[in-house]
Length: 351
Image (cartoon, rainbow, N blue to C red):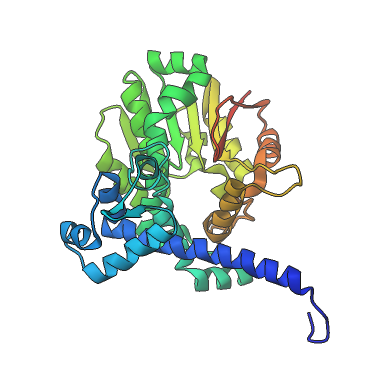
């Protein structure tokens, strides 16, 4: 736009209001991250309530700062405030105050600051095509990913997700070898090892930090963790089940990774892949979850994939992109499983 071009003032004002709302949410997310690090959200989630002075005293933190945090969260509708003080409803606690809840989004309060804190590196890495290495995001990103995924893995993986493939569950019950690629801090490995004691569950990841966390958090005799890349599957012991939870779009070359998975499967073996769900409304616009997935893809998924030499497909590659990669890798079937989840879609890959 040049200074001589007229603008639609009503449209500009409407977009100003919309952008103000976007920045409002971003700023509140920052305050939520601070409250999370202070332990305030978890304590409120466990029932702590009262005046700002009482809450600050219970936490052993500065009253004035705590008052400002509580005021902000109350103004944003995160917590309640009345004449007796501040409190959090059980419903809001399930989302922000309880890391074990399947509704928990607390992991994002680690992931987003870790990513946004690298805006300079992201701008430079994006402009040059060098990307940003995974390790540059630091331990907060690893912790956030773990916090984001662990509740679902602990509660839903063996109770809801795997049972959509009863033949696979039968094999796991009998005793087979399963490999979780990009295992992170080991939540999925722990859940499967606990549910299927006759099977050997192996988690592999190239992140030493993640593997260290995984080993520290899981000591089951049938769970094992290795610092290894997906390419190791092609030459390792065959697996009856290979899982990839929120991993394929993060890999430099998903098709090559899927080829390695196929080579690493035993006869009749299956790959279970979980990938971001990208939905659009009737106008073609992305829904809120899809926009969130696309934003974290821009800030983390794509840059770290590019940094390892890949073109990077990003979190928004969707079912069509995954299906193309599956076929190019030589698999015969890619079936979306009947699992309701607002953030993720699940695929059985075989043949």
